[in-house]
Image 1 (cartoon, rainbow, N blue to C red):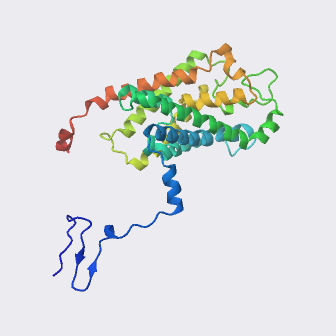
Image 2: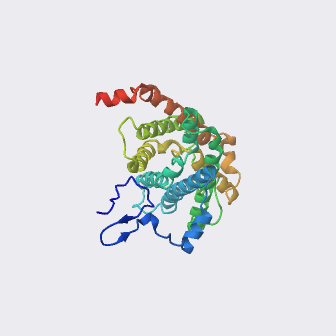
Image 3: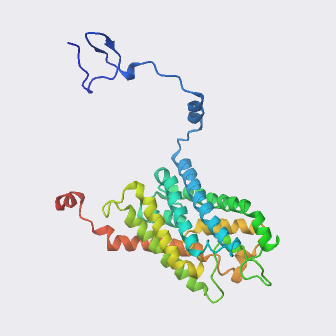
Length: 314
């Protein structure tokens, strides 16, 4: 009888039978790499920091491209009854889910500087990696805004006749600055109200992210995490969009705002209310995300029994 291969022997061992000598698959001469494999190998990046940057870049690029294009549809086709605020909110939920699907395994799918900082405060993300998260997030959001602008440039010209107008400009005919960045619904919304809005809504977002990704809570399957986060965004934008656009993401707001300042809308996108607004969707989400993360931990996350006790209870 020939010697049997039981899986514990060396993979280079030959197995013989009465009929013939059999070579194990590992022992065969390796195939020569194809030209596609050679190119892929030459492009592969092994630096963890650069991988994080590229992953976050692509994830938030998807987020901004899908989300801002939904707002462009709504503003530039206001007579189209089929596209309304509900569709915009649904679009943002899908945009976030797709962004997390794209970047979730490679970088954690933060695609939001406020979430990155909150995770760093909790010790879940090393501080030395935060600048690379930021670079990817802010650059990706900027280029996402650029893509939407190129896609809708002709429609913008029809709407405002080539005169890019900011929020509440004098003699305004078609305000398009709000397609890219967020502004208060009207002049009756005070700056402090918008600031509280951003703290509270982003706090809820971070709380839900903590719950969804907590492996000791409901054990959400990894493939369903992006969908759960997207549904959270849908609920938050539906509930908090009215005040000031429900940004909840500094990169989603600041990078497109910078883009509009450079693309014809001018400095008014920053000087609005004597420079007493643009900082609201930047600072508010950072504060809210930290509060939301700690609130979840104080109420739930810190009180799980040790793992062995958890398994014993079950």
